Length: 61
Image (cartoon, rainbow, N blue to C red):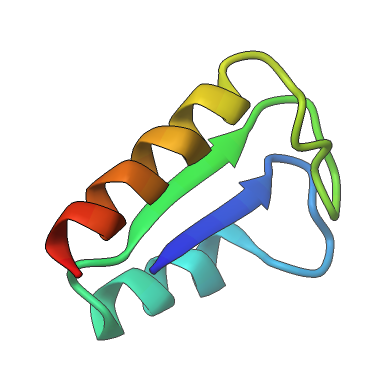
């Protein structure tokens, strides 16, 4: 599982993201600096990070 949170999101708080990670220890998370909800997926290195996550998921499937 991959969770992507905009740093300034009012819908998905950092506390909620922490709780999600505690309940799903293998969850990967990315916080996109300067973004709200929902973060723009073309921001910075985010496309490469998402692609890397997908590649790892495909290898483990």
